[in-house]
Length: 149
Image (cartoon, rainbow, N blue to C red; front, side):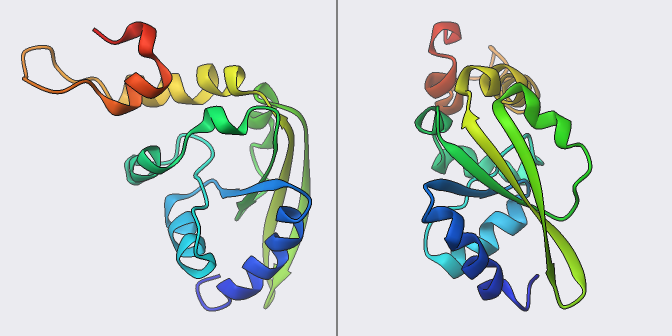
């Protein structure tokens, strides 16, 4: 993957031409794709603490109703996408003997994603103690304005 990123990008471009949003489920993969492609590849799913960088770059509200291609290293746990896509299919992609997957999510449901993914992210990573002085949390203001104090 790290040595043949341009080949991944070329394969993914065919889906972008079909109006898919190009994404991954991993911050490191998204960062590498973004660098090689020259535009942001969002992280779909909770990711790790590193994916919080993508929280500043991506607005999932803009994807509502769109199709999303998610590049993954495995086809396990695809059922996680059922709550925020109308339909999901997996297409294997092989490069130099290593297998990867293009997960095609059709008709992204922002409200389903908000509850299945963004709320757990907020609860895990954006719980700023009330006793600390701080500005309003950009993530909470963007996705949960009704809950911002």
